[in-house]
Image (cartoon, rainbow, N blue to C red; front, side, top):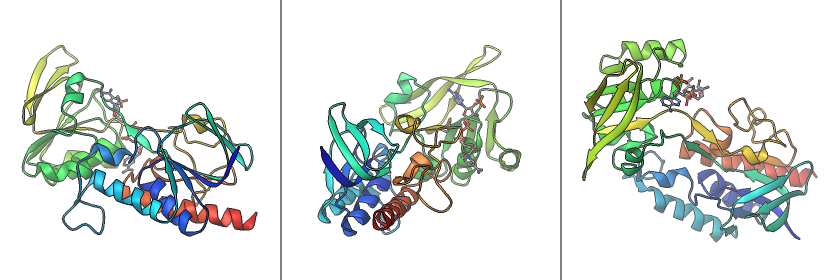
Length: 307
Ligand code: NDP
């Protein structure tokens, strides 16, 4: 059976940054990219907030560059997804795609999270053409336009407030008659003049044409169906961390995010580290994921040195 010093699961900014640091520390990392090579970032187009790119950078190019940089230092980047793990002690046992078995002295989990969508066919049709699950990534494209944010949690409020600073008008589409968000975030929303909350509303359909989103058809709880004219439709109904595989072995929070110790990437099992969105319900940015990938590689290096 192949024994790997440092096995990294996930090919997003966290996984590749971990790979760059681990390779430079002679840990000969093996990276399995998982179901979405390049990670969540590849679902967007231009990344304008990753430092070092004053004119923005194409998301796929950025991820390709990270992959190339990791390989340049000797990381072994492979296609494949972990389907089974046994994490009671190092070396950890990992099965890839149901058949390839590996042992790993250290494991870095950087499997990310996926934004939840409503599941409407029209929403799928306009993904990347007006439908987005990341206001920080795509909000800038809606300067002086009208957008809608679906959701009533802290993320939805935060995204609506952010978008309101750019857009002419922001609708919040909330399915109940109350927010789930904290009081302080609610107050901020209520104080923002260009946010209009549409209570008790569910989206029936995202409307659009060849150029992208033009509106949304909403159903209010009282049975009224009405359309709003919008240029962008933002989902903020939560994220699902890709942690199910690890749940029997690691401590997770109530939403399934892997818990890390203090200011480190250490999980509840020594030798297993977590980086990026799978352990971060709060910041969820490419640059914070990359930073935590660096931490995980440094923590893995220390674990091996001290063993
Ligand atoms: P939450 O799970 O807290 O909220 C999700 C929101 O989306 C709820 O209002 C929910 O409605 C709504 N929703 C879910 N599914 C649907 C659907 N199918 N159709 C319409 N609406 C739907 O997720 P968040 O991402 O907002 O927050 C995650 C965690 O991160 C929370 O603990 C939050 O406090 C934290 N956070 C904190 C921030 C801060 O402190 N500033 C900023 C961002 C996040 P309903 O209420 O009816 O279930």
